[in-house]
Image (cartoon, rainbow, N blue to C red; front, top):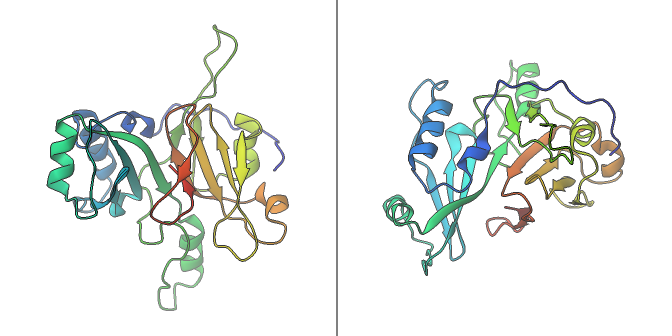
Length: 239
């Protein structure tokens, strides 16, 4: 991907990085979830729990959002972990939010509008069973600055954001991969020092050449300086 113009910084938006470091259902997390839910026609359902020995996911399908929590203090989650256990372990300080994923369905929504006279099609790709995220723009963390008197602006991520726009704001990614032919995963780029990884809707032959014009499909936030790992749910690179 090549860099071009930088977007104008917007201060209005949703700062999801406030989830990081929080326990499940902490006052901060609960307030942010309530803010996200204000645009829904009805209150969101309880999150779906997906637990593994080293990570617990709370999947908020109606919000287009998945939160991941790392256990500590000797706690070892099991596959049958339920929401009450997550709540209790969080209250005991043994679960902390280590990352989150947001899924973008703009392309699918556009296709449905074009084909609105026909039957609805099932979504495909990452997060296909998640609803669209309700409150854009998402304010991605600001890049660091060597100038102590300069305060870089966060990046206002919209569903229509493409690869070259993000590269223009953050510079070349510190890690990248994906996009191989025969796989469903698009190219991905990670800015480790900022704590951002993005998967793009570009895969197969010429994936990287096309990536600059591709829209994003998944954005992941995690603590600055921590590389994304392998998601035990699907084996892909993730938080």
